[in-house]
Amino acid sequence: MDRPSRVRVSGPLAPYAAGFREDLARRGYSPWTATAHLQLMEHVSRWLVLERLGPGGLTTAAAQRFLLDRRASGQVRLLSVRGLAPLLGYLRGLGVVPDAAQVAADGPLERLLAAFADYLISERGLSESTVCYYRSVSRRFLSPWRRPDGVAFEDLTAAEVRGFVLDERRQRSVGSVKNSVTALRALLRFAYLRRYTDTPLDAAAPAAAWWRGGSMPQVLRAEHLVRLLGSCDRRTAVGCRDYAILVVLSRLGLRACEVVALTVDDVDWRAGEILVSGKGARRERLPLPVDVGEALADYCRRGRDRGGCRRLFLSVRAPYAGLSPSAANKVVARACEHAGLAPVGAHRLRHSAAAAMRRAGAPLVEIGQVLRHQHPATTARYGKVDAIELAVLARPWPGAA
Image (cartoon, rainbow, N blue to C red; front, side, top):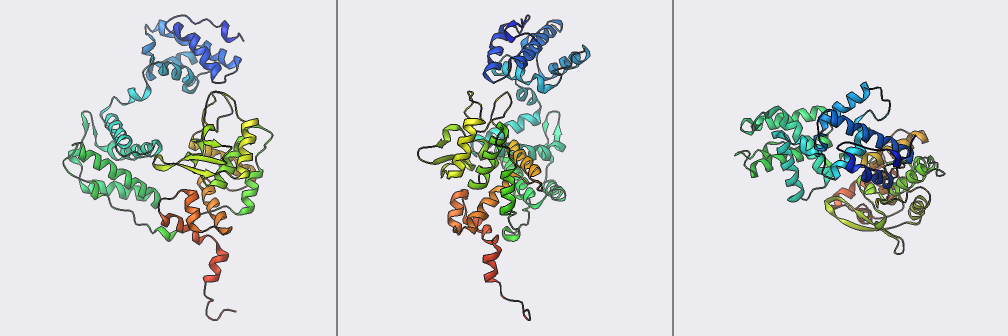
């Protein structure tokens, strides 16, 4: 295969070929893969000429048509939207190609949801992941009321709001329904404040009955955690990264979104501290235990690409970019599979970290500080996980030996 520098792009995308070549190299693509993407760019440019389109005509729909034509022409590589992603992402970054989200927001429902998301970020200060969840719930609720000219808020009544919550309860857990009700109330308050409706319906969403102390935190046993950490092959880049992620999750009790948000600048090696960006845009410092620091240092030396991305945990294949929260959960699930354990999520390790601190004698106040809980009642549930301590409080059963 030719070198990237030998691929010549003609047509409407020619002015952007040199910059795209540099972008591929900066993001860590090998020369062989970069050549394939530049050849794809050349094919797209020729296709735009045949379709009598300029670079701005490469919309999502046009990209789908191009991929159909590319498959029909007998090509065998880069035949999916994922294969086009590096090129489209580069052109969108330059403002040459319209952003997919802007195109999707053309409908009245999507415009409403975009305004709702902007309200949640600018006025409520919610995180990106929370806003994404609120939009998902709102889309489910409003889809039946979508009309060509907008959303029929005038047809909504308290009965419809209660009916939606009851439908959610039939399909989801109590905790999930609680989150859905919170999102729904936020949407209805927004609709009333912005005059989409003259009726304040947020109070019509019934609360999901749930006793805070009714469930026990699910934790990993100490021997299972040892097997989980030992399942990582630390001779490889993937193993170094996964081990570091598991140690951070199990020792510091970070959430998955907090782990993947860490940057190399958040680790203060001299002070022995790590800066965590948590819920509500809070940034708090935690002490860096020796084993956590050693795992991070080993990953940075042997498993982390030294590219321009400042995120701490990166993908091991180009493009080198920060991991997503779902990727962190997949790291835990993959380690469980290698260790022969039932799959669990990253949050189970947060519970396990709290249980380990409690077994070591740490008071609940200190556990709450490490986990960065806002309310003591949230931490109090971990007072129930130590069966040995609780056995002292249990009275013997009448007539038992």
